[in-house]
Length: 112
Image 1 (cartoon, rainbow, N blue to C red):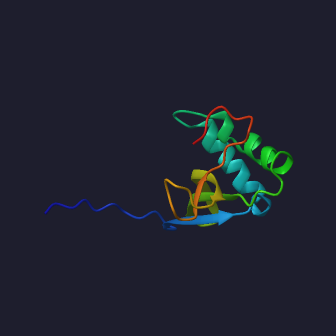
Image 2 (cartoon, rainbow, N blue to C red):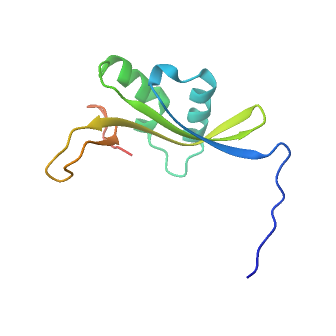
């Protein structure tokens, strides 16, 4: 078996996964999410924090949405590498258990 030894940066890189209510997001997380959108291979304006957060605040204020973030953390610096906004859904005929689905406002033409 061959293995490649990759040196760890100093301080080491770690991953953080979180599911937060939109109001719990920090300004840094929102900026990092917007940076992720700006550098996406296939950008989707309907998944932008500049679209999703106002839509949740004004169109669906009572929807219990969660913003799921995957971040890399190195020392005091963090960077969002994946983001999804999900909402709870009751059981359906096709999936007979409660589950989550990607949020899509009534004015969005594309979802995630």
